[in-house]
Length: 175
Image (cartoon, rainbow, N blue to C red):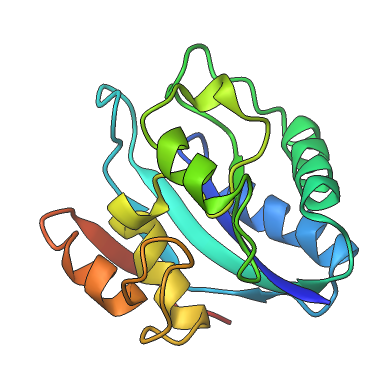
């Protein structure tokens, strides 16, 4: 059994799509826990609406690849179809962490940071999560902020502190 953390984001009817996504995630993992909902400005491509983001934590016996396959199925059901890379989306689901597993190996993971996103099918921990306040803020609600990133060996709290220049506002408490 492993604890997996899933990043959830949307900027097309975001509240409705995140709520629909949570319903579908609950069907697969009834004991799943969700962070509060946060609003953040878009990154990479800025000429689009703000995002709503959250993180989910779940216990699973599925492999990381199987978890990603389930997430892709949910994205398909919610009609994820960005018009271009980093464009607006109904939903975006990312496997952020899977226990302390590092995929590919730690050395490959560190190299993957400089490669195009398509170089590997699956990269865990998510290669950019430590740079994104909209991921770290909700993540720290669900795990011990003093725990450390599996490859960077820095606490989640320290990584969160390094993103203080990014705007990310809690808009809905966990229910």
